[in-house]
Each structure stands twice: as structure tokens, then as C-alpha cells.
Length: 403
View (cartoon, rainbow, N blue to C red):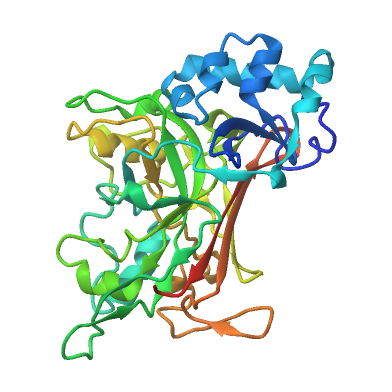
């Protein structure tokens, strides 16, 4: 494995195999596109100028949109170029003075979020939710194993990691209540998810085949799809999630290129019954990602992405099969990542079994759903080559009281 001349970067989660992109903001309101190497960042516009890069124009916009739209050939060329800059000692004298600590930056959303779609692709999660909400019925709905269920969210409420989340208000009605009431959510929850970012769009009316996934998807982020369960449970019949979801969705500040996950690919779970032809894939796009959910400093869950029933290429194919177009900056979230065991559940609804089994934190306090002031951190890592691991960054959010 090629090593980097950046001090300390070869030993951590963000060596040359990772190289995620982000956007650093400046006090004057401007921003610059950066790449992360270890605990340092390299500004790409300045690096492109210093090396007379052929791709310099793509680095000058202050966000990822132009690079994402450029397509797979350019993505590979830029990644190879950055790898050379950071591994070849001949570039060190010019580029080392440009490095800045990650912690010195205020990070923005790295791209313009176009459309936002959230899926429901974990069989363990869907089964748990079905047992909680419909205890007298089959946990999975009749359509669940025939198509990747999803909903369209609001791109305007996607926020970058570190942004506080204001507790939403709305209508709530518990089963025993005679009528709905209005007020702050009492059952505020998280959903630990993985997001896939579209780079190259598609034509209206032309579906995207499962085999074309790598031609359109630029990279991967972490997502926390905050959920007000009491608002959601009252509103979701018959059209699905609405205000219980649209108040905030947090996204990690770093976009890991899809190419960085080559060593993490694994065989996805077998699908039974067989799916329709447009959804058939070779099951090679399972991803061996390990998520970690931390609640007020206590790690309470480690959901495994490798168990997801529906793969990202299937999600993309289903999203477009009716002719819906893709746009640069579309965000496709996986849905809650949950495993078979309690300590692998990716939402507090499941982890506390709808509030009946409280979680004890390291400070001795207990929780069922989120309280004002609580902080949740979701991290993830993946296998690299030669026994290494690479990081996907983290997504952080703190709950603020209702305004």
C-alpha cells in the first residue's frame, strides 16, 4: 500500500485509501473545497494552482458540485492526482505549507442537496418496527420484499454535522387519547443511516439500470434522519412520513468517494422471493460498514450495514424506474441500519422497544427517547486493503428545546 508523506496520516482512518472531500468556510463568507488526509486538510484550489493541475477549474467553485457532475472518468483522474500529490515527495515542499488541521475549519454542507429520498432497507429494522406498531399483524407489509420502500424528504432541512436540532412540535395522539393535541414531540428519535450522493444526473423518462450505479453515484456520507415518533405515528396513514421527519436530517461533512469502498464490498443477503427483473442484481454491492451510535458519550449500538436487504443499486433503479430523473446532489439515504441483536439496533424506538426498555448511559442516567441537551454522534468505518480500516467521518447533532 502506498504511503503518504503527511505526518501521522498512515496510521489512522483517513490515509490515502480514504481521501474524503469537504468544504471549509472562512470568516468572510467564502468557502474552499478541501480533501482530508489524516487530521489535516489540503485546499484543492491552492494545490491545483501550485501543481498546474488540469482539473483546477473543478476546484474553484468552493463546493463539490462541479466535480460531482464531471463523471466517473474525471472522478478517477482527480483521485489519482491527489494520491500522487500526497504520496510523491517531489510535491511535499509545495503542498505541505498548505495543510491545515481539520479542527481549524468550520465545515459546511459539501454540495448542494438537490432531492432527498430515504429508504427502508433493513429487514431487521422493518421487522422490529412492524412488531412495535402492529403487534397483532405480520411485521413486514406485503410489499416489503418486492420493492425498496422509501419516501421523499425535504432537501432544505438537510443540515451539516454539528448543527443543533430544534425539537419539533406537531399533532400527537396516543392510542388511548380521545383526540389529538399539539405540542413538542415527546418521542424524539434518531435513525442511523448511510447516504449515497448522486454526481451524474439522468434524463427524465429514462430509468437507470442497476448496473449503472457506479456511473451516477459519486460518494457516500453518514446520515441521521431525526424522527418524531409521536408525530409520525399519528400522521403517517395513509401517505407516510411528513412532519415527523421533515424538521431536520443531519449529514456528515465529509463525502467519501465510492471508489474508496472497493475493499468493503461484500455479498448482500439473499432475496426471497425473487425480485422483478428490473431489480435483479448480482448481490455484489453489499457493503461491510460498521456504524457506531454514541448517546451523550456512551456507545449504545453498532449497526452492521452488511445485513441490509436492499442494495444501493436496487434503490437507485427503483427510484428511477418510473422515469424520475436524477440530479447532481441527489441524496439517497439507506434507511435505518439495524442488525439482529439489540446492541445492533439503529434507532431508539427499537433499542428501547418503544420506551419500555430504557437505556442506561455511562453517567448513570437512563433514556428512552431524546431529551433537550442530548448529543448523538454516529460514526462508521470500513475495511481497507491489507487489514487497514478507513473512516467515513461522523455526524453529530445536539437537541435544543422547542422555540
